[in-house]
Image (cartoon, rainbow, N blue to C red; front, side, top):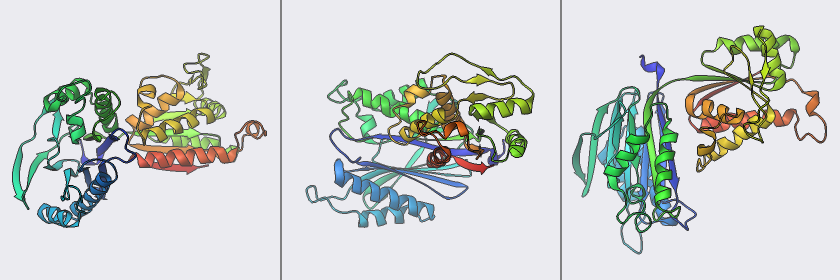
Length: 392
């Protein structure tokens, strides 16, 4: 498989120490160019504001310097000199894990005092081969690895390793149990965010939803690029409908049609019958329809509004993941396609004004429709998706 068909996908999820407004862990993700991806997970000393400052400074500085190809020794020395010193403990301290992947293949991992990152290869948990070096009295572990498709790297803060201490477990579940858990849930179809969500959420459960430490799980994996295409609304000029539909189907990948009028236009273009489903799988979401040649046909505004709600949650604590990831209603299916399966997303947006939506009591108008698409596209970009919006 050519390297251009691969992608380094990153996902993470954090839970704050119980009672804290700010997380003492911080994850920074940068791509200094198209061939390099860097993730830094820093864990600040303690919790709350001080820990947040320490971890944020550490992760931002390290990601910037590693992205600039500055040697690791210089990076660590610069961070050590910069971090503010804790007045109570008289140390400036933040642990960290760094992963840098070049050309979706060449991997460097540096680890300082965080639980040791590990790998899932061909569906099996594996340890990486680390060497150690001492820099300013800090022992830094380094692993080099040449990755292949679906290789998945697991990084974590101490809160993962000690999940459940004093709650459901006496001494936490430690690295062997974490590896067993990840090996048991792993599927190559799962996104990095899904895997991170599963691990962090399991920790939260072990803590009885009262985390005794800031808890962060981060997952980086090599995956195939996959495209999804979503058409929403008829073109401003009716004579442009066929051109829009033609361009829509010219794109490879999944094809999603959203909106009743849009479904009718596509049905006529394909010469196929649009079959409506009368069953409400979710009382809040209108039923889907079936159309040969199209992967998914849904209602428009209400469905997309729900997808946007899921997108906002995805970028927060992703608690809705356990709802939409298995449900079969239109909004859940769109979320599965766009959030989990696709890396590249094309929107084909018709700008015609639907007179049925212009009444004072509908709460729906042309501006609503455009705003929804703009917001959803923005959220998808924040997820790391490549998004293109074409208006007709």
